[in-house]
Image (cartoon, rainbow, N blue to C red; front, side):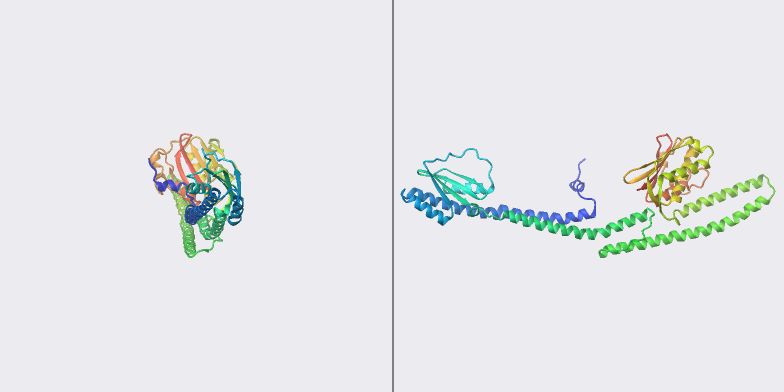
Length: 445
């Protein structure tokens, strides 16, 4: 399957806003400097170098003409005069010859330009060679009775400031980059802080010190988050207070009915009414637990391993023979900010369900870089894959052999998932390695 170019490029792009914003600044700067460097080195610098090389080649042609036309007695004087006027070091090697050039090593752009122009000026009728050093160029040219050597200062052939130009260009780019990093960091920091506050609030943790600051758009987003948080907290508080009143109003008459039944003569009818009353109270408690959710409890740092052990012990004690069928693989040392009572109720509910439907239950705790996971495995009948998501629906009762809501009103898993998601995590169902059902509470670290 072919990958589109855009998707391929995205693999190498930073995922954070700071990195992407920095690329938006660096990419045009890099492109601009590349164009300037090309224009300077490939156009202007090459043109200037060739123009200066032509002047040197013209001087070489003039000196060759002097060597070929002046009498032998006048040539030393003419060389001395030309050296003073042209600022060249001239020397003559009588009887010497220049070997025709064979395979040449790769030369610099300046050397190649000088060779090319000298070849145009003098190379058609005589041999020559050039050799560049740090400070000068040595040019050897054959004349009629020897070899004339010209030592030409480098500043007569090429511009001496390309390195300085590069240094200025790179230095200015680094300064601009440093300014851009400081500016972008100050602009991105409010967005990062807003993201952390929203993430903490989504995990049910308090964010008391968050205040809007930064650019106008960021301030507006932060203020919208604060308004949303206040509305959600007010809604949760009002719902909790309303449910507290409902609990009081409904349980008071139920308590009076229970007292009246206790004073009545015992019989099959009274026992049936007492069972119905207990069922009503249990159903009422489940309704209130589901509607209450995580409201009213603040997050606090807790040892997750200790919390799971306490929940497992409570579930085992509540069910006959539970302690002998329950095994724990729970390491310590992992502390998370959680709503301990709600999370303990969630774990207890899952373990109780596992004990209800399986002969052996195994509870384990694992944590990685991003998540901590609490696994509850049993060897019961399990739940078919296509029915697992339906099991989370409030008031939904499964018809298959494995019914996590047996004896209830269909709120057990809904309450457990609501608690897990209130911590910024989730509750997942899967096939257990033990053959039954695996319930996994996944919590962000």
